[in-house]
Image (cartoon, rainbow, N blue to C red; front, top):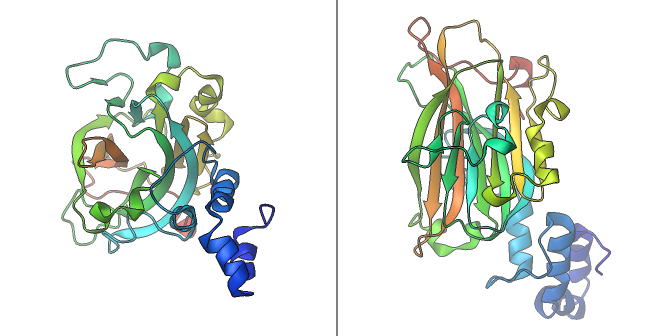
Amino acid sequence: MEYLGSKSLIRLALVSRTFYRLIMVENSHLWKIICQRDLKIPLDASSKFEWHRLYAAAVDGSHTYKARHSDQHIDWVRVGTFQIESGEALALGDLSTLVPSQVDSEQNEDGKNDALSRTMLSNVRIGSWIADLHLVKCDICDEPDCNGTMQVFDARYWELLLHDEYKTAVWNFEELEEYIVPLSFDVASVGIVDAQRLNCENTREILKLKKWIYPTSIGYPATAVQKYAAAASTNITDTECANEGLLVKVYSMKARSGSIVAIRITQCLAPGTAYPNNPRFGNDEEANY
């Protein structure tokens, strides 16, 4: 059964009560293996939730916008699973300015280095994280005819959606900071990295944007995931309009223990004086992810 796909396992569980008991009740180790195979969850991971429920929450299309703010949501794409082992994470608002050797450079009092467009987050839940990229309606202006969109990079501790505190909205996102990244070229790149693994060889591959981003003619977002990092990049269209650069906001969601269980980074064009609206990411004919 370990070699079957998840859909085949479910079909097999429906054959008889015996198979159902073997697959869905008694054999939790089976679904742990499936989680490791399909979601890259380490086999030594532990959880208070049933493994088949964890697997379902990760693959059934659930995400942080599905239950909340669904009216703002347009489309999304799964980036992948990565690990945070150090308890510290870097929320990267612009990958194009990030150089691994500069990670120890001087920071301001808020823990952010403006030159690197990054935010250091401490007390981050250690374990597996799932990253998604969303396209949502922009909310930075009150113009009724604004057709602007916002790129949202969401990463969550992989158990998050099963916690009652999340379901009942006891845990919510809180804004940590916002800043503007000057647009040196028409790309909105974003990512989250284990802060102590920034100089790992596989993490460096994510920082080499030219290796995985799409040509400027393609509006579909490019994504990349490594063991300790996940990232995404979208080409921006309509940049002939006046704007102040890329407006980046960083949010975190904390559990009752104080540990961070979700991180959100939003990106949209900061409106300029000549053009009050926020243009769309990607090409109009490729509006859907």
